[in-house]
Image (cartoon, rainbow, N blue to C red; front, side, top):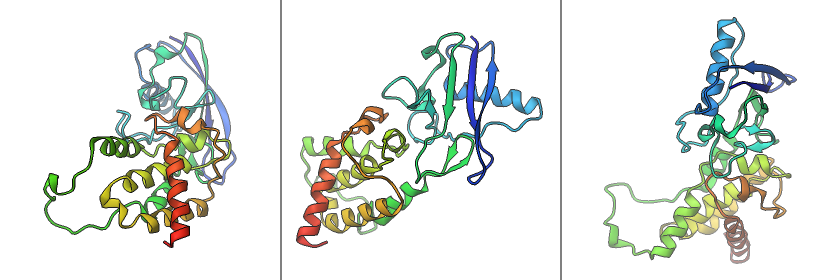
Length: 248
């Protein structure tokens, strides 16, 4: 299998970047997309050239660090997966593929395909937690939660923070990410005690980081590899307005 790759190369956050073209041959169609980048980097190192910098960790669709734009789509042409779960069988022999980092004001490029997602960390640190006594875990039946509520909270908590929602949003909004982190705690009794303070602090931090506003195009939901629903954004807005009305 032969592929032509147009890959974004950028030395640093302040440097001017540009696409550079590479051609790879004798690729196996069952290779993952990241394995293909590994092959490219091995060839570059052999030639004495700088390898392409890209993020990865688990390579199992869990950590969310591998996200890049592939032919203009976050994580590539297949929905419901991360970049590391994409395989070359999704492309045709001789295809030309353009690979670039997620683009957003709040996600500055560190080098090549690697971006700085620490804005997400700061949103979480501002309130995405609960205060609880330390010690052994409480007995499971000490706080009764219905199945529907538990499943809904799990669906919200499925967000892996990859940033595809931001990259695909025309406004660079982090509303889906922030809403998922707010909603999964707000739905559970353990999270209700600090719900008002949490939503105000996290929304304010989101705005402070320079993310754009949500205009309900729902593109974030379409590109989310975990299928996190935009209904979380509706809940975040409800929680936020309630907190302002009743006092955080």
